Image (cartoon, rainbow, N blue to C red):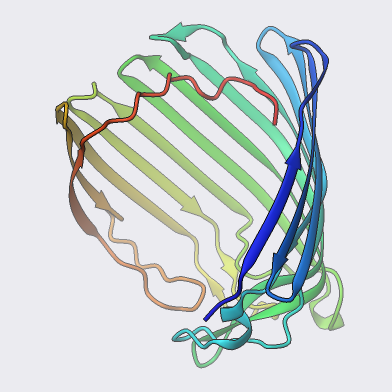
Length: 296
């Protein structure tokens, strides 16, 4: 069961100063089931020279409850027919730097540092309560803000590394006074991810480490998920062309960390996967260094 969904979006880019200042306005109208949603947004990009730029966005977002969230039980996920659409006013800004040096046509270094903030009305979030049942609820008012840092280095044509860090703060701003200013559920305060890829196309290896801080699973703060560190390693080889054939192997959760999702359901431990992919018409490879600064 579900709903019809339709949307119309209008967007344009205004180059106010060629290659220096761009403004990107957009409007989106959506009809989701019985709900009308309106989401305007304004983005801007300013080049400061030397590979340094500023980007910013501000706007309003909407999210309608889905048919499943309203009416259908999904295992341990219970519906809530009283859900209301979520609305948020948000803004973000970031400084972007690109070294403009190249390795095989790729940007050698790129760094993005920025912050964000949002004010929510009727935020939809899942909460876990005994006996291991989760249900979506509206938070009448909520505040979210934080900072992000991303970096990528392409040391050689065959070696690249990237990482990202997010610091997040959330607050429940309305409702039962016992939970005023309490952290919102399922939103960890810290998250970090790092990736390394080495080797040519015919044989390369990769690894990824993901860290996530502990988080509450309900507004009362009586239950929480512990922090987790997940480490994955893999390798792949494209050994034939036309057709393009790639063999990949991957081991996820290498340290066999015992973790669970927001409903309390255990997630897989250490697992190994092997994949054989065949492409009869391989798409042309996109030029590397796609993280160069550009307008939002």
